[in-house]
Length: 241
Image 1: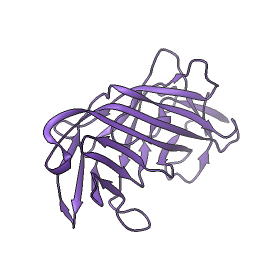
Image 2: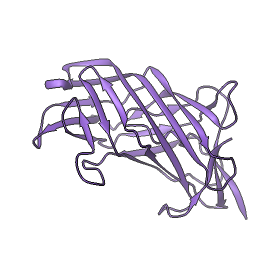
Image 3: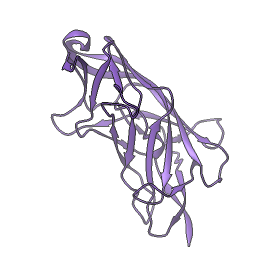
Image 4: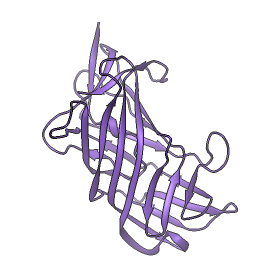
């Protein structure tokens, strides 16, 4: 027996390490993973598109060419109301060379330090087509005493450190859209990311003056893919309904 498997909020896995999105309202707009057998789970991963995601602060910009995102498998036996997502930003890109740059420095490390995202139900855009949804009220969840760290480097040495602690950015949104025709069996979801009001703290060089600022912003585009197995080798279609 084959059925569609409803999961909520998975379409925003692929934003950079600065937030996650909850429901805008009461309307439930699930992401549907197709061809999941009874008792099975849906596994979701994300990658940024060709253009890098860019985080801007008072000291300049942080840009990473490659990033990957992995959600915990959906539970079985009913609707999933939350999803935990882990992000990874390699020091070197797959073809060699620095993956991330920061504040004019050619190299940078972006460490998640066990910080994750929690996602719940998106909301259908009023007046928009079926399959187009919006996410607001982002949430970054970090263990006690930990935060995301951005550290630019010069000749292999750390220049300064900027941190983004667990928070709810105060502005912006993510728009999720079905990619291609609905019910094609190989459907992906694309994301258009615009976040503002991100809080960050840094000290030294371009990282900051030791105080907390609230003017951080994030832009970028990403694609989400769905799989029916834990090794992510059997791809299935996933769509907003």
